Image 1 (cartoon, rainbow, N blue to C red):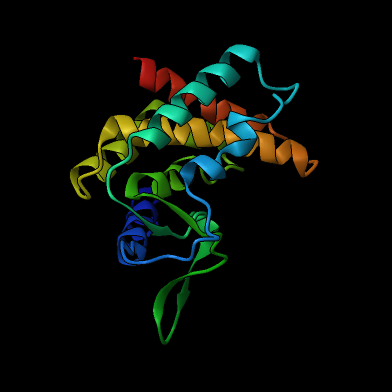
Image 2: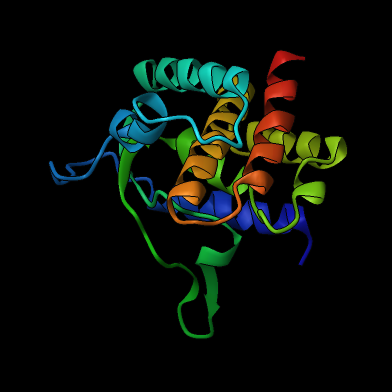
Length: 180
């Protein structure tokens, strides 16, 4: 399966999972989800400029969202599996209340074990184009969520004693796309 086909499946799953009805009060919203970025300490591997810009942009995105809903929170290539009987199913939900474009920030920075692929300009343009054209998501918000969530994922990686550099490479690429 090609990358855009996989991304389309993720976007379809995100659309199917988008539930704008009631959600449990203990589920974090986008601002709380980004607490490590908004209030946390900058990982040493992350340059201060990238960290501060991501923190400001994340806060801006979280404060001005479209309609929010209970989202999966970690919907990416490895968390969507094909079941012979049920079709495509999403696994390992985290739960976050945010706008639909937030959900796709995770998919745009994955597969993280292939940062050279994920950050290739043609791949980034095709992915953003697919999500904007077919699914009606705002390009600037998609890019902003991809960029800021990649910095957040780098912070989580450091906390989990994993290498943050692949996420930082993705963050720099999406920041460049946002600025360009």
